[in-house]
Image (cartoon, rainbow, N blue to C red; front, side):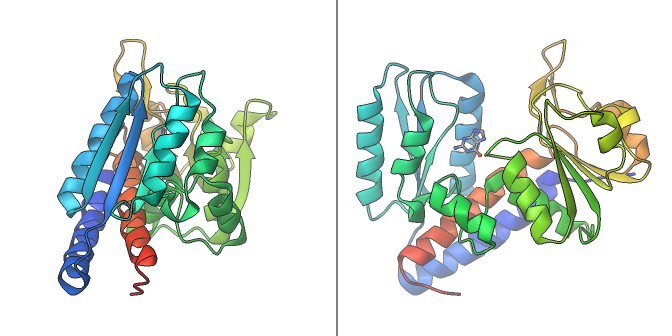
Length: 285
Ligand code: GUN
């Protein structure tokens, strides 16, 4: 069994972004800029946003944080997005989800200029991903693919099972595995014989949001297990969707939580922001 080290792969990706950012500054005088918008006081979102800002600093981007109060109105948020769309030193706009319940996240995402949508959540970018002709890769699924590549784990012809069908992870994850010729099954809360389906997987991706949901009986001997979960166990300790201790010995590869998929999401965000800066300035590499 080999543990896939997300911190290590993410450091390599960020190093590459850092080098390309230096070159962009030297050759073209451009510094990529990311605007991060957070509304309300969700503590997990606060941690994610801080990590995104730190990553920007590490790769040499400018980052601007817009922390809005819980009671922000839809009009105020849309107005901020509009301002950021028009700001030429901002290349990427990220509105941290989830938003407070009274706000319409769909309308907010659709208001972002697709060229600045570094999360790849806008319908235009989702459509491009579906067609396989995308500018921006969805951050978490692309981070997972990068880890598979980094460990030379083949996808073509493999049985890939994704548990979870969210727009942020499950659906685009399935699409990226399909683009690399995996045979993909998406499971969800209505799936019959879930354990049986999962136990056929060569590559099993868990994105359910339930602590230790994937147990050893659901995992094939020698499977690759990717854990997208960021959950809390019964003692309030951070854990994933996979019962790591009991599953790990059955796997050929497994990602830990923390230190697995999480850092890769941020690394992809950095890649997307750099790409956005290049595209908006008509620079090809
Ligand atoms: N909330 C959980 N994951 C993400 C993400 O990748 N991007 C944004 N904007 N919000 C999230």
